[in-house]
Amino acid sequence: MALNQSFFRWALLAASFACCTIASAAGLEMSAPDALEAAAKGKLKLIDIRTPDEWRETGVPKNASRLDMVHPRGGPGFVEDLLKQTGGDKTAPIALICRTGNRTTQVQRYLEAEGFTRVYNVKEGMAGSAAGPGWVKRGLPLEDCRSC
Image 1 (cartoon, rainbow, N blue to C red):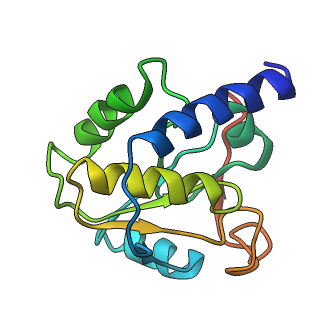
Image 2 (cartoon, one colour):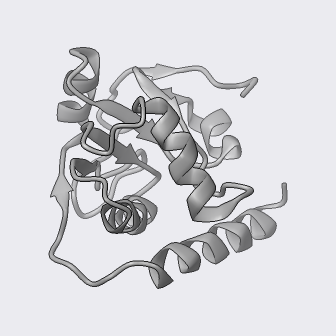
């Protein structure tokens, strides 16, 4: 998919997530190394919410599941697929990662509004942000995703 089409799809979905959320205090945050450790120990489910093109470009964080936030059924479809990964448990701890923490912030708020209670934001993301250098620059392990 062309970059501008991908961005348009993301922007449209982000707007739909944003319109459905309520303003709240900043949610739970976690560094990339802490997310790696917690996922490796089975303490939480790490979810990469980027697009398939992004997964193929950098790979996916080790021990992470992939769940494209640009879901064909919008926010409700995303929640349905996420619940499949958590065994239907909205209290199960999950950590969300995207490229720089912007999308995870929106999705975190949406999920909290949908009743999820333990949603962590890996705010530094894959590429880094003001929150930290990011998964890739830290040299944290990646799983190849050329065919996903």
